[in-house]
Every structure is written in C-alpha cells, then in structure tokens.
Amino acid sequence: FDSRREAARWQELKLLERGGSITELERQVSYTLIPPQRIGKRVAERAVTYIADFRYRENGETVVEDAKGMRTRDYIIKRKLMLYVHGIRIREV
Image (tube, rainbow, N blue to C red; front, side, top):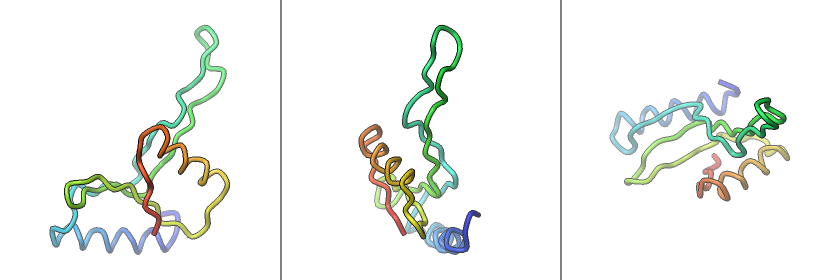
C-alpha cells in the first residue's frame, strides 16, 4: 500500500465486503484518460492513466475510491478527467 491510510481503508472495505454491504472489491484499478498518441507507427506520447485505490459495488452502483492525504495538481487534473472521460466521480476518503 502507498500509505497507512490506504492500508487501513482496505481493511475497512474488506470488513464491509464480508458483511455484505459492498461487493466486487478490487484494488489498483487502471483507467485510461488519454490514449497513446501515435505518429505513423511510433508512439509520440504515452497514454495518461489514473490508477484508483479501490473499486467496488455499493447499492448496485460502482464506486471508485481514492484514499487521499494530499491532493496534488496531477491528481486534481486526473480527477477532473475521470469525470469528463468516464463520467465517474471519485470518492475521496
């Protein structure tokens, strides 16, 4: 885990899953925000991705969650791109 906060949240989510409050719990799920850019056959720019700390189902809806201590500029841009590209609002805990 990248932080104690993330590790502690994973333990909480595992308990919720065992209790049946959430299902399909996953860690480190990758989303493509901008695909790789190519010139001819070579990659000119690599893809931009966001890796969510957790993804799970709660009350029939998919939740993408990030255990945040600090919001960096890169994270804020990626959070906005997640909403714009995938229609997903990240839940921060």
